[in-house]
Image 1: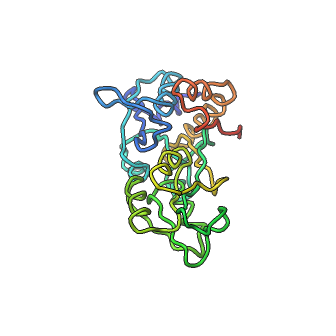
Image 2: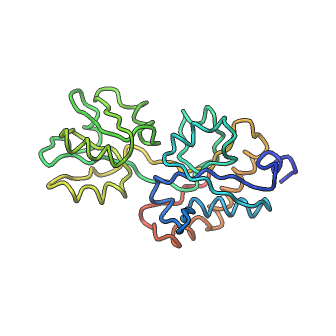
Image 3: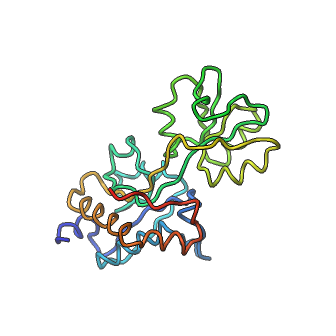
Length: 242
């Protein structure tokens, strides 16, 4: 690390880390005062420790709101899914963890596999501006994409309007499918959300440092230790080395 890296990320000895509170695998709990607890906050803390900086966690309701603030000097690093749209304003490391995304379909559905979903006449419900929602925006060509604000609301719309498929993270869908008689989760995945650490597109030196930090955290077993610590093993996976 050179001095430029630390200067890019902090001007006052504090590292401001934007944390996506809607990702229940990366933020598994919070303290009485609202401080996030989980893999994502712990990754931010480890980076701050290595840079000899104090850490300030900045909770956000959605990852889209974090991306919106990329040019507003509201945070120094962000822990969200790396997506091409977001990468226009954010320099991302390679992923440190990943989460499968798939679909729930109704009990009477003729959809049997993921390839059947993107067909003319089908309606897919998805929480807007999520990493998997952004992926679907780019890759769904025949079905109609119904975008709803908020993960909970996307479930409600899927059920109430009897839509053909609900897109989501597999761990969350495992709980949701129990609420719908006869519904099922499709095997496999249409993508995996690549959870990464990002910083401003202007932070050239620190982007390189963060990328090296993430690879070391995966290689050393630190990310796996956090997954074990926060009891998300089997739902959150360590990403492959870049």
